[in-house]
Length: 248
Image (cartoon, rainbow, N blue to C red; front, side):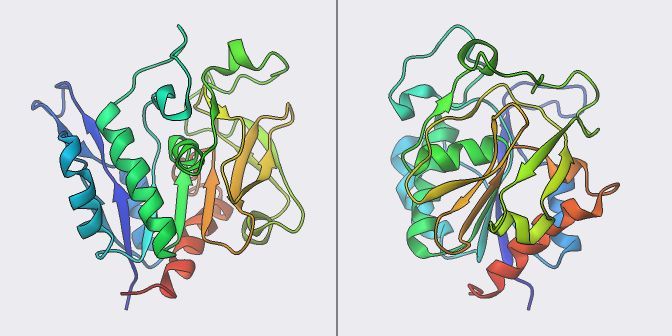
């Protein structure tokens, strides 16, 4: 039986040319496709606007899935890691942050596997007690790479070095060329997390559990690369493998 993989929904709060209604719950299409292709059954978890319903929904959601997928999205409100917002901070969705933080902690407590992408990696780190650089250009002066790439975001942009002996190394090898669509990054690590890949300028590009393989996060977007770089599909297959052991 295929494991059930929950994908946290983002929200489109303003009308667009394609979706002409407010507050549409959306997920990246390529993430859904990658999970199906690698043997998962994806479901979508919308977040509530009412904070008082978060714990109730999380308690019910946690019973529905074997593994959790945290996709990209907007910035994370810095109050959740004890900082005031700087002028460079981008768009945030406070109710989404509240929900994801509670869901991540419940998922970790339940022992279910997590795979996190871009913002997903960042909020995983915050949920476990870490913090972020709110803006690399202003907070990380030694950065030598443009991490918010100018070319189309589906194209590979810079290399990453993967730590020998890490779980990520076992999945994709010691080096990859990745895309880069972020201006925030992991600063201090959360509890139980370690760095498993970095960019040439030292920016954290992947994190994972210090013991076992419960959590894995990457800063790039493998869902936009795997059609041309099949190594990236292994990241989704790895979540499916880890979730098999937690099948409901």
